[in-house]
Length: 386
Image (cartoon, rainbow, N blue to C red; front, top):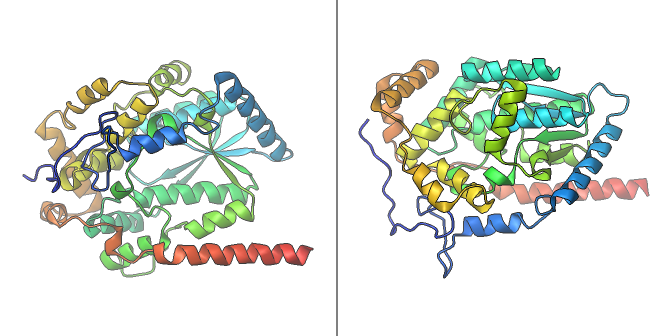
């Protein structure tokens, strides 16, 4: 594998405020050299609850907790949380228990958990006395779906996991009549992510097209959730999804020290490194095949949040994704063994011309129609009630 970082056709430029650059083909810059990503992130951060003062955040969070407790009265659980063993989900678990909630922790076992992630999940559930619902996905079908996305040559290789995890959380909330899903999503470290780097996570038409074209020709049986279903869950079943960590002053590095002390949490050394597959996608597939280094988005988010400086981010980015060539070779070997492909097929996948969701059938053209029809459906229901 001698292919290096993809060459960008247009002149290279890096933002003068964050570290996003023209490896995102759709990036734009203003007269000050500020990119559209950090400009939009700053606008998001001016909205509540993130923009509230610490005292106001505490009040807003307490009010939210009272609402959740009220909604869960008489039920075994009052909220659903996802648990991956990573920093964000671990701290959500710690926080909700500290605030007196009764969470149902759900975990999708897609056969890619690192040993450290498993240890972290066990420690969290044991220490916090949280009940975990673990779903073991059909590995053969899921493996075929992951492999199909790699063969499709889009940068969306994480979609199978992300969609199935999302489906599990929403389905569990509906099953147990739980009105709140509390997530680890946060603006402090995730306010920036270029659309071109990955999209279509809830596009069932896109996912099924990729599977039918590059995977097993049979009907996809794995539970896939769509934009449409999620909208139904929100509007019909009144399920709310809350980015809990935006209600506190969330600093990932400080939080690591807390969960290490309180939960015996172990660091896996990288963002989302709790999943072996995620590590391989973010440190091998995306940067070497597509030229997308997701560290730039994460560090840029932290710059905008005031948690690191631009100079620090540039220094962090100067560190190689792989310390040595052998680590890279080992990851390729792991990927091939798990997915059941040869090195020749991996090289073929790797050398295939990069594509995007635009090259395949997707729901973009039909989504507006579905939303309009859904609005009409709700309106007719209201009229009948009157």
